[in-house]
Structures are given as structure tokens and as C-alpha cells.
Amino acid sequence: METDLIVVIVVVTALAFDFTNGFHDTANVVATSVSTRAMSPRLAVGYAAVLNFAGAFISLEVAATIANDVVDPAAVGLLAVFGGLVGAIAWNLITWYFGLPSSSSHALIGGMVGAVLVADGASAISFDEGVLGQVMVPAVVAPILAFVVAGAAILVLYRIVGRLHPRPVTAGFRFGQVISGGLLALAHGTNDAQKTMGVITLALVANGTIAQADFHVPGWVVVAAATAIALGTYAGGWRIIRTMGSRIHKMDSAQGFAAQGAGAVVILAASKVGFPLSTTHTISGAVIGSGAAKRLSAVRWGVAGNIVVAWVLTLPAAAVFGALTYSVTRLFGTGAAGPLIVLGLILAASALMFVRRAQQRAPGQVPTTAEASG
Amino acid sequence: MIASIVDTGDLLQVIWVSLAAGIGVTAVYGLAIFGAARALDLGRAGRSGGATLFGALGVAAMAVVVAAVVLGVVVLAE
Image 1: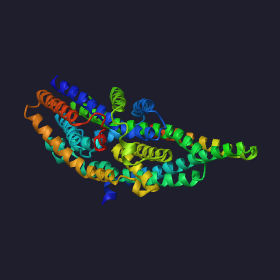
Image 2: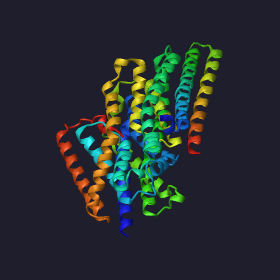
Image 3: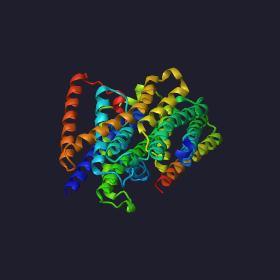
Image 4: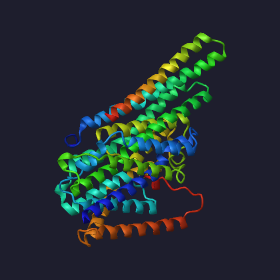
């Protein structure tokens, strides 16, 4: 009975994490379309939310990687899953508050690894094939690949349409951004919602609700994760709409089309083989690539530097927070009291941070790219 | 060492699919815009033969883009 209550707490916490992921990442998905005026903000946000929802149903490979390949589901306990999840949330809150670059995806995996390491030992973690092979190497490759694809694509496009009258070309690429922006939202829903599905499924396996031999992601988990990320995307659109499109560089509609297309194909191809990527880093790589191919000086290279810092920092830092959260939870025993108390502390800390930030921020000021990392 | 840890087959698949789809489909969409824009220009200039030819190029290229997007989503969902 008490373990069922912990499962409920883990599921609710995971869905809250999924909601905030959509909330943060709205800017990444829609800002390019909005900044080039391919779509109105209202249409872009609604469109992205619908395709985020649809994307979550396309594939389950990433969920399987999170639930099976990074940690050993047979050896992991419920409190470790809770510790990892809350550790990731705590790290995301801290980086958001101090404006440090981060990645929700890497924080989630780092938090899990840290909590499981303390709870169940190193033998419960697949460091080589799991953490390194499925997470860290793809995390390095994906933004570079998106950079190269977007850069090459924009050079080819300028070669094809460069001598034409700009008006029909701009109109054509704005229409193209409806397709590429839709694909990007679909890709985001596919990769990011599956991480939450993986964590919830891991908790269900740890609780014995799902037998490890009969591993599958239940339908209600898919629907719940899809709904949470879509609602988060819709809710987040109004706060951070300008972040990605104009903070990295001013882009024309051809660049927007190339960046969205490159980001979408890299994330979708990675989702097909089960690589959990940082969608923010991948989209940022594509946006920077489309700008650098046109003019190196047009790119704000500081944002690229932030991504590198986030690569180095997020996994180990979130692992430490996952381990700490698990340890604090265990101070209250193995029942539901620990998760309830820790969750209460996190909620109180979040409320305090939101109030402090609201007091510090001038009216109308948009958050930084670091805050929008996901 | 990395090759023994990473599934290089999967990684290479991500790389070639991204390059082919990201650059290839984008280029074909560029051809669709090129065809449509040239067809408009030639149509205004009264050169209906050329306009039809470029219009056909634009339509064919657009059809390839739509087919590629549908195929990509179907393959992903399999």
C-alpha cells in the first residue's frame, strides 16, 4: 500500500517534470517561426503543443533506453527513482535561479545515475554502453551534427534561390517553416516525452507493477506524458517566445527553415535508435550553424559556450543532487514519509525561488537562453 | 575504445540520415521555391511555355518533399 503511494508520488513528480520541460522548451520549438514571422505567436504555440502531443506516440525507443539501458531496472528501488527525479528538478531550479546553462534531459539522466549509485551501487549502472554510449557520445555528436546539417543546408539553399526576387522566396520559406516547425515540435514531443515515460516505467518495474521480463510502456503512461508536455508547451509559450530566435542571431526565413529542418531530422533520427538527446542543445546547434554559414560575426558565440559548459556541468552536478536527494529521503525510512517531506521541501524552495526571481526581474523582461534550456 | 562502447551502427545511421534528409530535402524544397518563383516571373513576362516548365518543377519538387516527410514519420513509427 505504502509503495503504491510512492509510485503515485513518482508518477506525479515525473509528469510535473515533463510539464516544466515543455514549458521551458516552447521557445526552442516556436521561436524560429515567430522571429521570421512565418507564424503568429498564438498559432505557433498552439501548433507546437498539438504536435508535441502527437510526437509522443510515434516511438518508444528512447523510453526503453531510459528504463532499461542506463540503469538496471531489476536492481533499482522506487526511492532511488524518486531521488533521481527530484535531484534533477532541484538542479534545474538552481540553474534557472542563477541563470546557469543546463539541460533538463541531462539533468534527469544525471540525477538517476547519482541516486542509483548511492542506493544500489555502481553495479546497477551501465556506465559504458548506457551512460557513455547511449547518452554522452550522442549528446556531443547531435549538436555538432545539427550545426553541420543546418550550415550545409543554408549554403545549398542560398545557391539555389540566391538570385531570385526576395518576396516569393521569403513567402516560400515562411510556408516551409510551417512544415519544418511542425516536424521540430513532433521531434521534441518524441524525444522529450519519452524520457518521462522511461522514468515512470522504471518506477513501475521497481514496484513490481510491470514484470521486467514483460517490459513495456503502458498506454496510460504514453497518454499522460504526451498530455503533460503538450500542456507545458502551451503554457510556456507566452513567457519565452523571443528567446532562441533573436538571442542567438537575427535570422531570415531560409535560415529558420534550415535550422528547424536540421534540428528536427537529427532529433527524429536519434529517437528512432533510442538516443535520449538534449533537444535544446541540438536546436541551438542548428540555429548557430544556419547563422555561421551566412556570417560568422552574426552569431552570439557566448550561447555556444554556454552549451559546452552545460555539457560538462549538468550530468555530474545533477548526479550529486540525485545522490543527495536520495540520502535525505532515506533519513525518513523506506516508506512514503521521506518522499512526501522531500517533495514538500522542493515545492517550498520552488515557491521561494519564483517569488525572489519575480521581485528581481523588471516588468516585460524575457528570461535568458540558459533559463530556457531543456 | 569508443567503438566498443557506442553502437556505431546506430550512430552512423543517425549521421547519414540527418545529412541526407537535412540537406537533401531542404535542397529539394529550395528547388520547389525556385520553380514557383521562376514560373511566376515567366508567366508575368508572357512566356507561358517556360512558366509551365518551371511550374512543373516546383510541383514535382514539392511532391518529393511531402513524400519524404510522410515516409520519415512512417519509418519512425514502425
